[in-house]
Image (cartoon, rainbow, N blue to C red):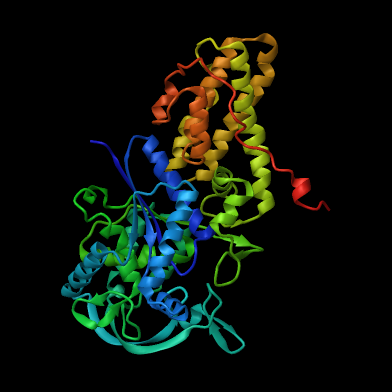
Length: 491
């Protein structure tokens, strides 16, 4: 049987057009999905939108639209953005999809029948911008107002009848989960934070609201709307309820931003344990992209959208920069200048120049098939291990270390002087390996290289199969350098 692999992104609030924060997670998921396809796995890649809740209702009303009209207009913008970034998902799920709503109602009823949901009174602080409840100690006090620590916006004090999920009941089971499955929370530096908070004790969670209408009604009390996080988290499971997709559950990895790690590593497994559903293998929480050390956020006025990102140096350069510029899991500070420098110094000077020189020399002198000993310098096992551990930036580092080896080899052997066709073959065969390994990251460029060198990118096994094509010609320039002097005023 073919091994399966299931990767998800968070489902995004469609309250505006997608920006670099959305793009980063979705791009990482695309890289992971493509890599696992190279490994020969049957891959399911899910992304989508979270369309219920008070925030959506408020934004829609401000624009004079119904919530459904409002989200229907924005969904194409997300799909267009992912198409623009060459992201190939398998399903775009919406929490307004009928199959999803059906599953959420089934799960609510199942958990209620188990005795894990009860009616009570809720009083506490709520941030509509992130659809989250906070205790007073979590909030920031400023000028006599209590602010959300994420959005720096004033929270509201809610008092209403609510159904509660018995989260406190699952404290022990959650701690056992973290202990027995050390890869459940990655990167590992985030585990201690969650474990310590859970050890402090868990309060039962309010999972219904009556103060607005935009959401899924509770099947056992239709005067209440399901709390948006119970609704949203089950998208990962509901997408696999189609008979052809059932094999994909449990998810291999949920890729998320670190600001929603609590929901995914505490609420989510507790809901699943209560419902008797197998747990996902890993939740990987990456860092934030910042401008001037503040989180990129539409509500804070610090944002770069996908069109702006791509316009700087092209799609593959944007993809490369986001995966290369910072360790996956850490925060990164976005800089247009840094993106251009990576485009010029690494993609144009190192990769582009190597491919162009080798193709030009082969077109002039031809190649002679030989054993490729240069390939021994490719750290393929280390790259595989790093990709397995979601160390995407480190895998790229190893791939580019091999590109450096190839560039040093061509300088050392000087095939433009020696006309050594065997050296040129070794370089061409090594470029094949490079294109295959880079395909998850910069697919358009890799496919151009593959076309020029006469092979198709199918799987990693091709790296061990010698290049057969000898009719190689110099193609278009892969990466045109951008003149920084013209673009920026020098100090």
